[in-house]
Structures are given as structure tokens and as C-alpha cells.
Image 1 (cartoon, one colour):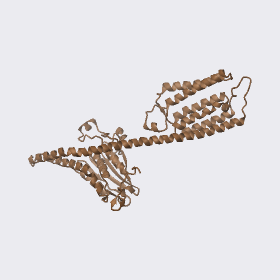
Image 2 (image 1 turned 45 degrees about the horizontal axis):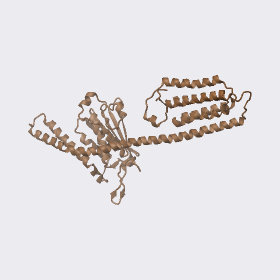
Image 3 (image 1 turned 45 degrees about the vertical axis):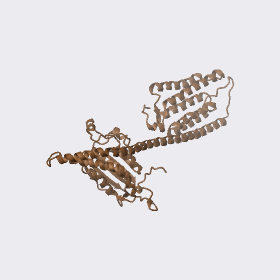
Image 4 (image 1 turned 180 degrees about the vertical axis):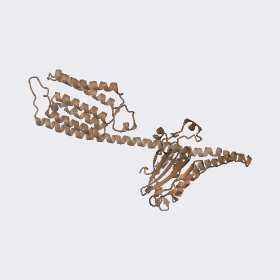
Length: 456
């Protein structure tokens, strides 16, 4: 049993809080103590007090030891929870052995550990506890001390009655355990679904906010970019032809123009939706996406495609284009010398792979890839300070979100040694990539790359 941190799986998965188990056992200790004293001194029935109180005291000692050793917030999983509940079954079985076995009305309490397990733990420990209860009850049918009764008298219970109690106990154990598990499992599934829905809604909220910010940025940045381009052009005219700064000003003009083209694209992406029948092969799409980055110092290598059958051909989709462009730009930004873009397809799927030779994703960042405002990879502090882009950590979030809307599945990680760098794989079902837009009259009603995650 270890002190493990609370995780999301604990909130919707199979775990049992230690404090809950300790409180239930304290309740059992109090109830057992009261029952022993009432039977012995209230009703005057002879009872092996020393042995009974020893078993009760053992449960109290276990609770004290658990409270001193572990924090109350500890959540128990698997074996630890099973052994503690198994102890409760055996301790109660010992008390029943001393007080009449299954003839004792309190034998019904053997069901409690099974019900607790069914509502909190996985099926396997619950089944094992159920078998332990059945074994304990089977022994108590045959072997037990007489049921406490008035001095000088002996209450004889027919064996057939005890066997009937055994059948009732086993049946109740199976029924209540199964019912409790099914009801609780449905609640867990609902909690997981609500949690996933909240995460999706949060991501959609971020993306919707970014849509508005993009439009505002396109409007606000247009004028200063035009001014930068104009000043750069005027300064370039004043430079002598052999000036060492001529190449720098030419690069400044080209990048300012590229920024203006990007802003223009942000304000007119929807125009591509007006041409639902514009289709292109996958190789043409990759070349189109790679072309703007060939002027950079980092080399762009398009690997030989690997495919079985005809090359995938899909309709131009602004979400596909923008998402893959963001991933390529991110790879170029972090690469040292080269970015490799590969494509692969078969009869069931289409995959685009983007790999760079940079530092790769840092372990802590890799676990949070796709969340907004998570930025930088395995950079040093100086590298981050000198990074011209000053990224906000939105590139991967936007790319992941809009690509998943089209039905894609993204896998992000680091390349296997001895290679270094990050690798991103984007996969679509082949049927989505090759799908023709549905027609109704003269209007196309459905996009070719529709998200499989869209609600019905």
C-alpha cells in the first residue's frame, strides 16, 4: 500500500478512500462492542468475552495503525483495498464462530465488505471477496460454538435451517454485489463522459475565442505591416547595390509580405468552402504546404510516399491545410537542420508524418501536448530568451483541435534514439479522405473530410 497522488482516474475509476474504510471499521467496532456487552450483561447469555473483545480490539488497533501510518486522503487501489476488506470478512467470521455461526442473526453483515468492494473496486477483487464470504459461510454452517442462550438451556437450530441461511447468504452476496457494481459502473461511465465533455467544451471555448482574436489581429496588424513593408522598401532604395545589408532588407520585405498573406488568408479561409469540388492528390497537398518554408535555413525534405493502391485524393479543406501548416511551421521553428514530411496510406487509413531533428518534446511538456498556452520543447533558458517567435503555445493546440474536427487522430512524441527531435503523426480513416461530397440538386451538402466526432 503506497501513498499515491490523486489522479483523474481516481475520480472516475476503481479506488477506495482509506478514510472511508477506517470510518466504516470504527462503526463496526462500536457496533460489535455494544452487541457483545448487551448479549452478555443485558440479556445474561454466557459468552466468551475475552476472545470476542480481542477480535474487536484487533480491528481498533488496525485502524489506529492505519491512521498513524497513512494520510486519510490516501486512495486504495487493487490489492491493498482487497486485503483490508478480506480482513473484515475474516474478523466478522471469527466473531460469528464464537457466537453461533450462521444461526447468529448478525451473519447478514458478511455482505457488507462485498457491497463496499462492488461500489468502489474492480470486478476481480469483488469476486474474490465474494468467494471468501462463501467459504467463510460454508465453514460456519458446520463448525461454530453454540448460539448464546439462557444459562442451563441450549437452543438447537435444525441443520436444514442453517443450510437455508447459507443459500440465502450466497444468493444475496451474488445479487447485491452484481447490482451494486452495475449501478456504480454506470455512474462511473457517466462521470467519465461528463469529464470528457467538459474538456471538449473547454477546448472549443478556447478555439472560438481564438477565432475572434484572429479576425481582430488581422484587422489591427494590417496597417503596421504595411508601414513596415513601405519603410523597408524605401531603405532598400537608399542602400548602394553592394551594401552588406541589402540581403537583410530583402528578407525583411519578404517576411513582411508573408505576414500580410497570412492575415489575408485568416480573413478569407471561408472562400475555399465555396469550391466543394476542388480536389487534389495527397502529394500535391504536401508540396503546397512545404513550399513556403523552403526559403528558410532549415531544409524541407518530402520523403518518398509509402502506399498500397491508388494515391488518396481529397477535397481541399481549410482546416486540414491550416492544421498541417501549423505543425510544419512548429517543426521548422525547432529543427536544427532538416524537417522531414512523410506520407503513408493503405486501404483503411492515410497518415502524414512530420519529423524534425531538434531537441524534441520535454517529458513534462509531452504529457500536456494539445493544451492551450503550453509552449517550448527541450530548450535551454537562453534558447527561450532568444527565441524570436515568442510563441504563446497556441500553435499545437489550434492544429490538434481543428485536425481532430476533421476526423484525424494525432500522435505526438520523440524520435527513437539515436535520432533526436520530435515526430507528429496525423492519421485519417481512408474513407474520409477519399469521400466525395454528397450532392443535393446542384449544391454540395457535406464536406469530404467530416469529423467522426461530430454529434448526430
